Length: 119
Image (cartoon, rainbow, N blue to C red; front, side, top):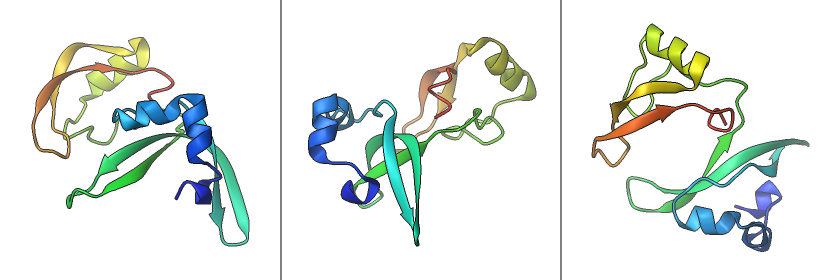
């Protein structure tokens, strides 16, 4: 999988990104090459290891976005128009929200937004 994106285990290890990924964190932005037919798209993305419903580990690719996707639920939480405005204006919701990840265990989370998080 890494080879198909123009990456290698060694490159991720040398850059320190592999250690983050092995700790279930997202990497910083890394350059990837996505082959599509006869062409290749070059972009940057954050990478992370994730498990599917059967417990298999796979590579999650978090592509760059120009702006946050606040019109869609985030881990089950839907932002109100006022909350969207607050996040875009200050980068901080000013309160915790209850989110539910794929594991199904809800928890309270701070809701912050930075330009890197939009990616």
